[in-house]
Structure formats: structure tokens, C-alpha cells
Image (spheres, rainbow, N blue to C red):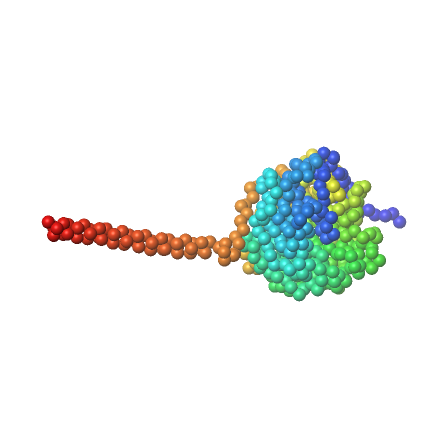
Length: 460
């Protein structure tokens, strides 16, 4: 029988590491045992969690600042415990959130040209977890909405603009939460947990709308992400420690749509998903390869495309949003691979002979403009991502000013206005008293003068 090969434009994706002078060298990548990506990227900066004495820190480098990084290069160092997860805000390329072992989430505003001095003062501190915070995830379409998940088995959804915990999801997870991911318009979240269950949750109604126990039989950590069509993709382990990739329909999670077995390894698979092209990239921690698959509506639904291999194992991985790619070179993905002492960008391209813009590779993608304000989302509104065209490459727009208004009695303005009003009233009272005293003194002076005149006449 002649084997029919499925036609796909991503079958020949060509992965290539950049030259040495474009890598970021001499970085002490964090040795924390938590299974996070340790790296996050946007069109302006790359941020990497690094080793730090006496607390937690991460490095923020402008993309162009490649080469050897000075040991004295300033870091973001406000956490009292090791940093476990970081993520750039999708609506402002200078705002980043970090979760730490010190049980707090901090929000930072990075200067436009990067750090000149160490940054220890965040613009917002989100306190609500009682154990370490291992996951932070920004809402994809609502401005200033952030999700955090901690080892206290809770998920908290924050309004970053006011530093308030708006929704707390308790008693849904009996054990540590391994991953949490928003769907495309941010109306639902999917989580994976140490109890081997995958849950689809409506956070505003605070209800579990779908649940699959033992999605993967293995004891190692799982990951779960939403796809653009609303299905859920999970990575995990079988009972025999084989790594698996599975696809689920949240409206019926009894049986997986498909389960794809890969290899036997201990490394947790980190999935990175491109919603525009429906390609998912799997980067295993400790692996030296990136596998990629195309998700389609036709059987077998998950189609293996290819593997990019290298010699060095990866400690973590950053994934560039679509608007940070070079469309003139047909670049469809860029990864920032963490080694023990450096960060190496890997460029994925689809070879094309034409120099023209390739519409099929670059459909309109999610831009940096939020569809909703935080208050609208908490009130029940949903909004799809506002799409932009990459035809002429992405031109950054001026970021909206990032403001945090802390609702704290001591910090709130009315308090100061009150004090101000009270002090003004007190001052007027004192001035009146002084005036009356002056009047009294002058009247007494006149009286003394009159008495002296009378005494002098008597003496004569």
C-alpha cells in the first residue's frame, strides 16, 4: 500500500539557533525545582529568573542587549523568596508580574529602555495567598486582570489597577495546581492538578463546568491549555512513564478525542500554542528538542510535524508573541532556550521563495489593545481579542500609562483631604485667637496710657 502523506505548510518548518553573538551569555539561570518556563518574552524585553542570594530576582534585558551580561547588571529584586513564575502583560510591554515563594505576587513597571539600577519597589503587591505562588497568568483580553495560583490550592483573580482580590476559587483543587490557562476570550480557565484531574472552570460563576479525573495516569506533573476552538490540550504521563499528548472536548470529557504517545522520559512537557496557525510546540524540561504538532478537525486531529533537535538540554523556555516575529523572513515562532549559563534564541521559519508577505502564514493576530476594562469583565462582559495585521511588520504603539490605585485607608486621597480640611479649620481658629489677643493688648495699651496721663495730672 502506498502511504499517503498529509499535506501541511508546516511540515518543513526549519529551526535554527542564532549566532553566538546574538545569545545572552553568563546568566546564572535559577535552579529552583518548580516546573515553570523560567523565562518570558515580548517584542521589547526578555525576562529570565536567575539565582539570587537573600531573596528572589529576575533579569530583564532589552532584546538588542545580547552578548555577555555583566555580573553586576541590575535585576528586579523585590521578593523575599525565590521567584517561581513570571509573565509579561499582553497589553503593556513594560509591565510584568512575578509570583514567589514569599506568598506574594508583584507587578513591576520596567523603564522604557530597561533597568539602569536594581528595582526593588513594585508598582503593586498582591497579597492573599498563604503559601508560595507558582503560577501567574494575565487575562488575554481584559485590561489589568491577573490570575495567580498557589500551593495553598487556591486560584485568585486580581484587579491589578486597585490591587484587590476580586475572585477567590477555594475548595476546587484538593492538591497543588500544576497549571492554569485562560481560553481565547478569557471567559473560562482550565487547570491541571496533582490529583490527576483536569478542570474547566467558569471563574465569575465560581463553578466547575467540566472535569476529567485521571486525565493522565502517571504521577508526574501535567499541563493543560485551551485551543482556539475551545478544546483542551493536555500533556502528561502514562502509568509506564511514557509522555502523552491528549485532546479533550470540554462538553464531553468522558473520553479523550485522541491520545498521542511520544517517548519515555521524566521531563515535564511545556506546551506553547500558536492560535493563528493551530500549531503546538512541546518543549520538555531537560530535553534537547522541540517537537511540534498541527491540530486539525480531521482524524487523527493531532498531526506530528517535526522535531527541532540540538545538543544542549533546556532548563526553561520563553516563547515570543506573534507580533514580535520578523515577517520578512517567514519566521513563524521564536523560542528563547535557557541553558545553565546562557539564553539562546531559536528561530523557526517556513522556507519560501517569494519575498512577498505570506498571508497564509500570518493571519491577523491578537494585538496589544485590550478588548475590555477590568471592571467590565468582572461585571460579566466578554470580548474577543482585538486583531491586528502583520503585513508591514508590527509597529509598537505608545503604551497606555499604567496606574495602580491602592484601596487602602491610609493611602486613599479622601483621608488626606480630610486632614487638610481639618488643619485649615484649626489654622483659622488660631489666627482668630491671635487677632483677638492683639486687639486685647492694644486696648490695654490705650487704657494704660490714659491712666498714666491721669496720674501725672494728680501729681501736679
